[in-house]
Image (cartoon, rainbow, N blue to C red; front, side):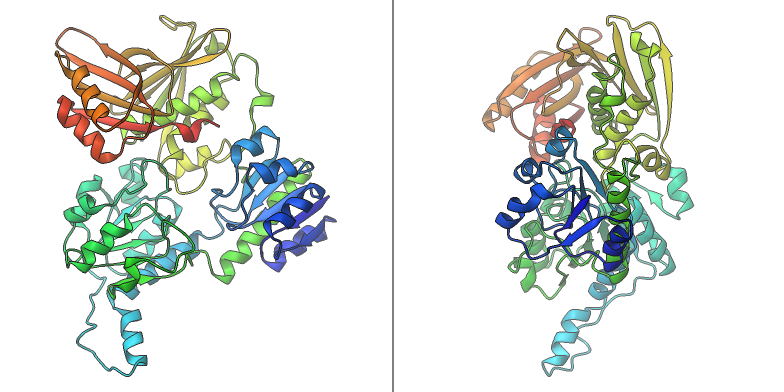
Length: 526
């Protein structure tokens, strides 16, 4: 077996592979063209974040069995192509969580005490104690967006500083948060109360530009924002404008929308502390990542279970009756997350003929879909139960041979009344969403979907069409469900492009909808 290490990892990781009799070539100086020329000679490829293991590279890697990402994110690996070609993708999701948490605290302290600006002033010959007066962390309110592994470690450390902790995370139970000394609140409340705001969320369609001028305007004028998660979650221009105009206190940023970058309006502001994506840049984190990824690649090459496999292909092990439902189950989980805004206890009901099958993998698929949009690291069929447990999410299966109007149906029921159901129809195993919030619909899941709840009355459909048309957005499909004339109704839409938060708010207000949600299902279309 031959492994190509295309980016620097810890020597201990390379040694681990060689000690197991694996031939390892460390070639960190390869150009893209050189990499494409030689990748066909290797059984495994190990990268960090710079190398793009895209479709072209994977197609050239005719012998590739494994791609190892020495770190958490796998944005630089084409998972769809890898899965289609039978290439296992593994990562090292726990390697840098402690380093990332400590870097968050470092940025918070540096920003609170104006350390970089004061350092630069003194080194340039200015002794100015009054200009760089800071604030204490003790007694301040820290709002944490995302109580995953990094967010939890930040909370533990902030508690030691005597900070008051609040958090927004729709998939952490109040009991779990209370055990950490954290009060769960809605996002708007978190923004309004925060003296410091720290972000620990994945980047996806829902979190891109999550913090814009609208959200910043809700916060205290002297509040500070820390982001060590992903660039693009915070609208950088809006943040720079708010700080420069004195409407916001400052920021500590380790990640940016475009990386690498050496130019940003934020870089001109003394109130902003920046670092070039150093969250994982500690000796300890790199050592852990190198050793972990070596272990995972070695396991995969031996055909053994790799704990941190990202794209486990469960399809080959399933019965013909269950296999078509895997993708549907994941998409239903994704829809449930969007409409329920969380769920600490869910019941997954299997109805009809599917109830007689082994549905454990379908339950894993539901959890994968539910958690995938709110967890900072990749959620897989292997780690989904652990991810749920860490957030205090409980789940149970129920089965019945009766499926109402369908031969088979999967329904997810939340503890606060949210429901979503779906089925497979026809000889081509076509997916259908059959119900949302207990409203009956029959609709293929699309890439971009909107769900609105409103009081049934004339003119609503026209209003929605007019608003979307005015924004140049085409409606590809529309279904309406209601229980009675003049009562509550649900409109389900598939549109041709994403709907941002501003437009979603406009849709709700323009139609009188009491509830409007947008869902990007592209991330589950693998």
